[in-house]
Length: 363
Image 1 (cartoon, rainbow, N blue to C red):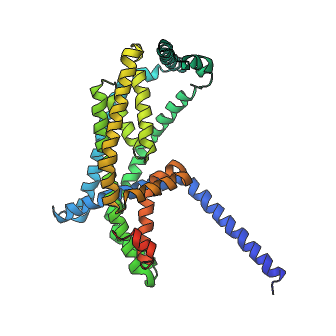
Image 2 (cartoon, one colour):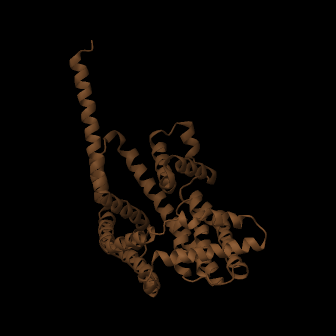
Image 3 (tube, helix red, strand yellow):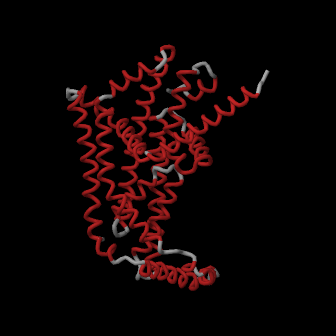
């Protein structure tokens, strides 16, 4: 029989549960920077594990020295990127210091005027639409100084973040056996083998995935750079790097990269004739970027997704699409690693399920 005391206890338990969950979410929100450092360190650890094993097995390094060598490689790569972009940033320092919203608005309006003249010359009504739209009244250019201040703030905290990530990564690599040993004590004996096998397979698959992803981004970066250099676009290195990084976002990223490249290409040629110089150059850059995407979609991505995480390209497409609808861009980015983890855990704990058998036959 349900009494008032039982109901009151149930309500009290529910309220305490909600309170604990709320406090936990508040705590995680407060330390979100630390969580980001941990996630980045975990990714670097997954990338570094195969390199660490190579140093130990092939070059006969001891464990600590191999760990230091892997960390040194990461530092060299980061330092290389910094040295690649710092001269370009310094070269543009004067322009940034003189940057004001009026000049940016003037440049944008100059570009719009040239587009309007081009459309007028070809008897296209869109030119009148552009004039009546009064675009400048609808675009708030004041966001740019705030955006630059955000970038400067990010750069100023980059050093502390980088040091924290490298410190955490060092101990993740160095003491991974200790972490596994500690995990064994927390794991119930009845599921120990299944959980440890899952962790081993997840580590292997995700290590291959992240290494493959870095290789893919590097290939796309080189191809973008070649396209931009061929057509003489200023600051080709920075534009190629930004567009390559956008490829982390499946399917949508390359589209955003193409739009970004087109806009920057047009703005870099302001003052030239729109019909004979700006428009043809922009079209050639877009065609070049689309060719790069064709190469990437038919060569790089199938190898990474199919080989590294043992999943069919259509399967991956549906997973990314579903994650995008449910959780947006962030969902699309984490869809493949998370789906891989779910598949591995499913195979270990539900090996007789027919659907799981079908999805994990190659794992």
